[in-house]
Image (tube, rainbow, N blue to C red):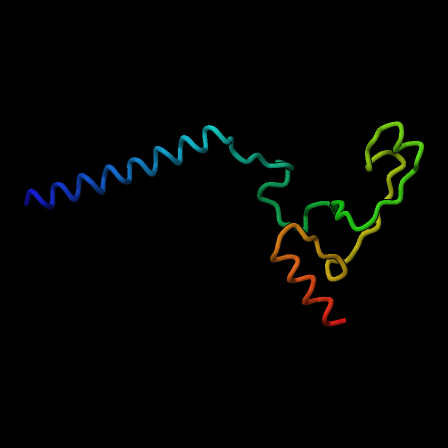
Amino acid sequence: MFQAFIITLREGLEAFLIVAISLAYLRKSGRLKPFFPKYIGKRTQQHPAAWRANGAMHILDVAAFEKTRSYYSEPLLGYPMPPERSVDIDGEAEFHEAERLLKKL
């Protein structure tokens, strides 16, 4: 009986520590905030079209770039690139995926 009590106490303490460490981490690191809160709960088909830069190419207005030192200076135009023609390589897994796709060409 005493052994069961000690095991239960140890397991309870372990669970408490895991929760306490997790809460401390969340408090320190902050929480996620919706980027577009007005679209929460809506189907993705109800969202407006959106794009992001993939770094594949930048054609710049030199004067605007020199003035702002930003790739995103006005006039800003985009070229929607289909996902099957664009691989964003941020890590080893994406690199291997790009290699695999290149072999198919």
